[in-house]
Length: 233
Image (cartoon, rainbow, N blue to C red; front, side):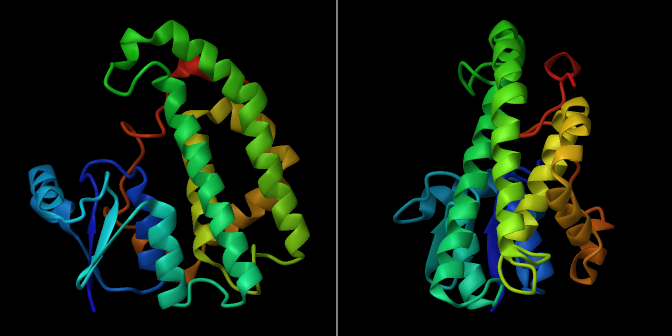
């Protein structure tokens, strides 16, 4: 079966976490809004019953699966992108949901008042939010990820092979490097296991074609944005 992935066509955003799993798993899919445009996404969402709250969502036959962590847990079980034992399944879902929390906080740095307002309409508040995010939240999340990897006793979060959550940690590090390059340069020395995982994912044979292609959208507008005034060591 070939799946339909629906997400905004011009940004990596939350959809990229799903794309990485599909690509690494060798799973056939169509990136529908990339093919047909944002208007097609809006129209498709309007026809779904029950409707997904927001993209990304994955259509698999009669199923419409929304929410990034939910999609990835489903793919992990169906396509062996995660171990099958209950403890690992629960742990990886927990990791993915925590990554989703950090992604939301990273977005809220540059839109702390409201996502409907332009960044320029909330710059003072964004500067204050960025200071807290850099000094408190980034070390907390990255430190937790480092401890997880230390507890695993292996190169990957669960078992001797990468899982969808390992791919998502890679994407999280990439996004933070783009948005906060100075701060990440300081923090990375304190999180060697996390950075080593990022480096292992970057050279996975299963991802080589995708990561080297123009299908891998660059960061820019979207969740992870680089405003120099919001970054500091």
